[in-house]
Image (cartoon, rainbow, N blue to C red; front, top):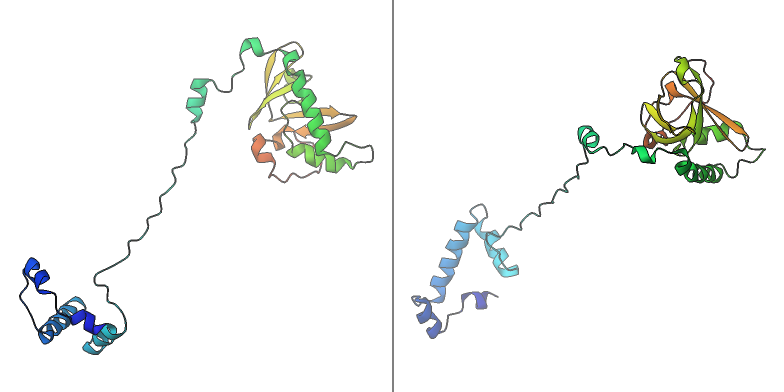
Amino acid sequence: MEGQLYRRLPPEDSGELRLQPQGSEEAKTFVHAFLKRSMPKMKDEAIQEMLTRKAVVLEHYPKKKTKQKRKKTKGFTAKQRRELRLFEIEPEQQRYAIFLPLHELWKQYIRDLCHGLKPDAQPHMIQGKLLKADLHGAIVTVTKSKCPSYVGITGIILQEFKHVFKIITKEDKLKVVPKLNNVFSLELDGFISYIYGSKFLLRASERSAKKFKLKGTIDL
């Protein structure tokens, strides 16, 4: 390696590069001086050992790969959703008969979730699954309320928000019923479940991870 490093250039190459001819000693002195300037912290012995054992790469630092941050897609704000009327149901669509197929799908969904709602099924197990289930399509009735005008409202749940249910009645009227201070009942295959709205102030997507206490309460 040392012979290759200090060998003379052919005369034609020296002429093209406009280099003055140098002897092997002059070239060796130049290389050592250059390496000393390039690596001032290294001792002469270390430089010599490096030259005899491996190739030297001067002033070469690998570029650090910068991780590209993924841009999070921003959804609509609450104001934009209101302006676009994303959650509004058009008046011509507010008909009870239109959503009966949705109710049939919901019943089948609950039967599959509860493994058929068998007569020997434990009520508290079914109740626990219903509390975490999707209620869109369920027929519910307001059985108790601090506001008497809500009592008796029955219909299919079309939309569930954190604080309210949107229910379509058999009279084709869209009712917005708050969860707070109301008790709802739903019936399926002879099993009746009661939902205390004041303990149910969650979005549908949040209830699947919520741990509910199955103890009864008299508070509305």
